[in-house]
Image 1 (cartoon, rainbow, N blue to C red):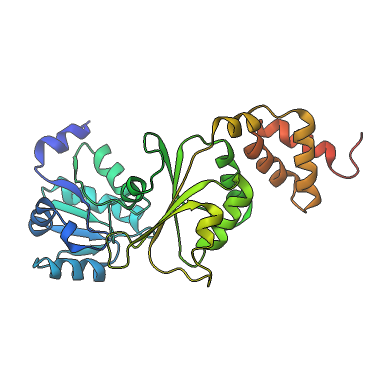
Image 2: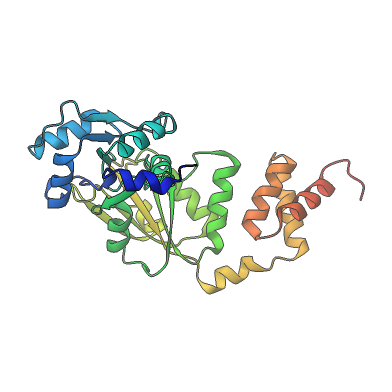
Length: 296
């Protein structure tokens, strides 16, 4: 049987993840220019956007651009492995920032690495790190949440888990949903400090800092534009303790409120388990006992 390291020994090819500017073309590195100019193939989320970038950099893209997005990534992974194994230099870019960070590419990276082939990076711009660094909040420990689920129990459970999350929380949100999400976050976890980084590195760059209530007042007309990254302060010690050891009465009260609001037993149990840090099975059993018609 031929092991994966044989591929590596035979192939000088590589998959290189190339970070591209968030908006300011001056942020592109010399290494990024060289790598994109020399690549045999460039996989990108949107060939139109990457073609514009390459043109601005004076790099020809004709015949080298391939579309790779969340809907076709799994199907293309084998093709990328074959190209690298054949000795080709393959570059991977996202529309902006660092590939695979809440963007496509993870499956391809895993496939190429599992084949024993070279995966490397040209590091550079990242909206997560950029927003965190200018937030004024704790940067020693943080958690990246990507895009928060838009609706339903999964969304509520995600926000509820932040009540006792001690690390700084970073997430993406669309400008259209930003204010509604901030109001919901305030309702669930309290009036924490937050920083909203908007249009980072672009002409209209803006960082709004303050409590959630103060930040919400910044857009009185309710209109937010541009790319947005949200940074939220982690829970303080008292907040964590308040949710760490709930008693049985608190669990039953929370479940009863969810059931009265119309949640199913399963959804109520999942949400309360996340909110109060109790076992999901225990919460489910308690919810069943509270269901109308259940024996006392």
